[in-house]
Length: 108
Length: 108
DNA sequence: TCATTATTTCGATAATAGTAGTAATACCGA
DNA sequence: TCGGTATTACTACTATTATCGAAATAATGA
Image (cartoon, rainbow over all chains, first blue to last red; front, side, top):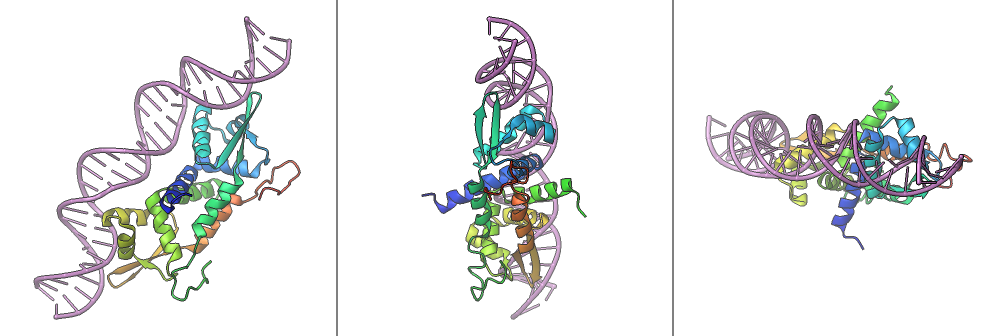
C-alpha cells in the first residue's frame, strides 16, 4: 500500500522522466515498436543520441518504472511497461471534477 | 501545423511541468475541482505552498498550456485545460505497437 | 486616499539535471 | 584466447530548476 503522497512522488518522477525531448522520443519509439522490445543500439542509431547520454536516459526511464529491459546476448532490449504507463495517464484524470458544483462530469 | 519535433518539445515541456510533486498536486487539485476554476489562494492554503513558490509553479503549468487563468476581482481562478491534457495523454499512446511484428495491438 | 487582501515579480542562493568523452565491462564468433 | 561490437560506469563541466523572503502590483471598499 503506497500512501497518497508517495503516489504523487512516484508519478511525478515518471512525468519528470518523460519531461525531456530525448526521453519522450525514446519512450514513443519503444511504445510504437515491437512489444518484445527494442535494442539500445537501434535507439542510438535512429534517435542519434551518443551512447553514454542514451544510457543515462534509458536508466532514468527504467528507474521510473516506465521501461523494462531484457538481455539477449550482447543486446539489451527495452520495452515499455504498458501497465505503468496506463496507470500514469489514468492518474492524471482520476476523480476528475469530483469537487465540482453539481458533481458534474461535463469536462472529462 | 506544428512539426513532429515541435510536438515532442511541446509535450515534453508539459510533462516536465508535471514532473514535480507540488505541480502535480496542483494539477490534480484543479482537475478534481470545479471546472470553472480554483482561486490561487485556495491552492496555497490547501496545498500549503508559499505564495511566491506557488505563483512560479502556476506560471509554469500555464506556460505549458495545461492551466488557464481568469481574473475575477482580486481573485485569479485557475482551471485545467482539459483538451490539452487529453491531447497529452493520448500522445503517449499514439501509434502504439505500430511497428510491431504483426502490427499486433495486444499491448494497448 | 487609505487600508486590506490577493497575487506576482525581483533577486539571490542552493540543488538538481543534462551532456558526453573516456574507460570499463559483457558477450560472441573465430 | 583474441578481436570486435554492444552497452554501461566514471567523471567533470555546464545549464537549468527550485525555493522563498521581500518588495511591488492589482483590486476592492470605507
